[in-house]
Image (cartoon, rainbow, N blue to C red):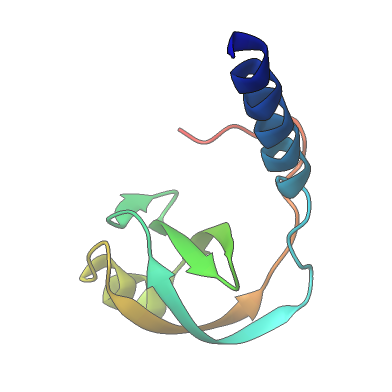
Length: 93
């Protein structure tokens, strides 16, 4: 029984690892769910958004950043922007 659980956990871990780089790199315009409360960072607003089954780290500046900063986790927001892959050496802090 232990081997079955270990095998299932390993398979799930491999799947989740493969999903890290499976995000789209296309422009996006539509609705997204706010996953974490936005924070003021890097001269703008940083937030994690859920779009098409994937999570994206978003950074917004100026008026868009100020509007996004008033949002909360669980809210649905309309966003427009470019989706790009994070560099492999990037860390979220």
